[in-house]
Length: 233
Image (cartoon, rainbow, N blue to C red; front, side, top):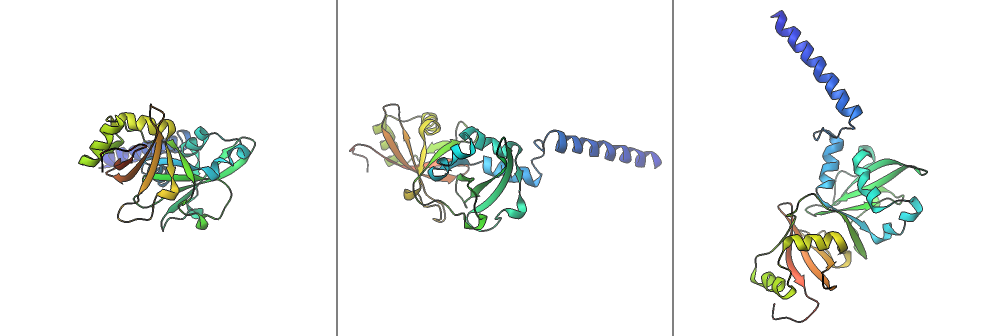
């Protein structure tokens, strides 16, 4: 019996040391069950959007779009300052920025929406709502080559043929390169599924519009807005 207790004691010591290494030396990256990382993973499972109103402030902070995505790598989630209920939820993440000190970033999580907006101009977290005007740049996508799938309906199939845009991977590539969300044509409070209006430039230089919902962690395109007349409904 004593040997069992001894083994359990040594196991507990080893586990505790290992946990300390993970938390303090590896910055929690291996612990998806920790509260910080659960929030960060929930955000990174979505498309990160930078509203144009925030983009205008980037130079003031000396930030790049890449910097904004890295905030979730080693920033600290401030749960006490976050809005953990309502629509949208808003999580505050604080990160040390060279020459700027600690900067707070606000990430929205709208119910059933596939986007998370990034705000970083100083504000009251309770006043942050889903953006309803202007555009936002799509600056980060989850790592999924099959993230986009158009409806298999006859109308969408007809639209894809008219656009000569059959490949879902090509659509995703275009979204990553030039994708934007038009907030004025999006309805993020619509139930049961918020409606997003995304635009992108295709290989022919045409701006293509699309209505998109989040379905089973995929960007489900329910309609294309063609830049020309066609027989599609």
